[in-house]
Image 1 (tube, rainbow, N blue to C red):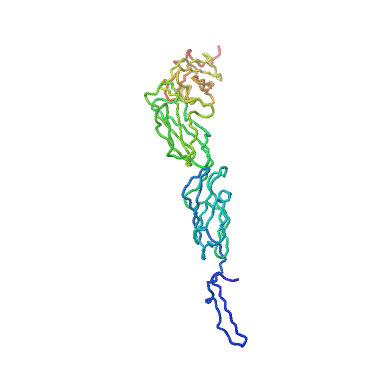
Image 2 (tube, one colour; image 1 turned 90 degrees about the vertical axis):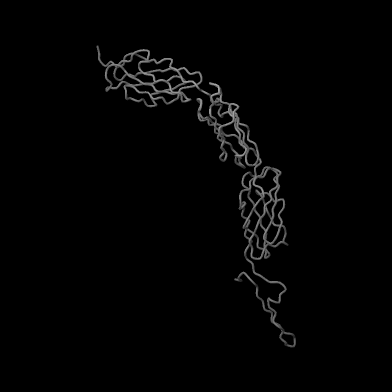
Length: 355
């Protein structure tokens, strides 16, 4: 029930003869007496450096608020870093404690977690709840980033096209350092290199001097914020072949149908074959039969340089010539001259009339 604050006391006494002595009160005591029920409260936790490696020492400065101050004469305060006993913990003043810890290796990587339990003059001990720094970051990082995936946005690139390589890394203790990223493509400087967290994106614009049908080689380097270099990246993941330069548009080799004449309900199968030394056909051609019947993707197959299309003759289709238009590009984006019924090796005819 005693409130925090000054302790009051009165001592009334007499001698054996019955003479009353002057009362003694708290003001006569050689030091102030205070009730203090409140533990010190942490107000700031700072470190001089952000990233710490194996065998390095972190120095943590802790500032506390306490009405009557920390007990600088008390035993060394207890402190831990990443769950390990601190190397040292000392009172610097009535409001400040310094904790140091030298990393042995194997501690949990990532943001540092601290516990410190200094006490005040009354013996109240600060909370043992773990805490982090109050300004900036403090991180333990002893390992280099590892490569998770390396992906190109396309397989073939025309002159002037932008090659984009995205590299994703894993790193328990840190993220990538944008100041350390470098990339070259085909021996030339990258157009751009950007880092966001653990993802690096490098781009390159295919130049006129880059050879047609050449592999697009690349070399990508970066370190994490802790100073650890990631493995150099020179290949795509998943055993994917390197992308290629493709400066030449495909040319038509043949357009062949499976028959000449088709009755209602019959299926026309048209196979269009192209030639392209350094590319493949894009998987999304537009194919139209009878002027307005655009085929769905399920009626089209693209394998390498061969496009196969199927169309079922409708009751609404009039007897006579079957018209068709195939609009296609290769993976590099080169447009091929449209293939029409005049390019097919034989005339295609709808015949619904029995002999």
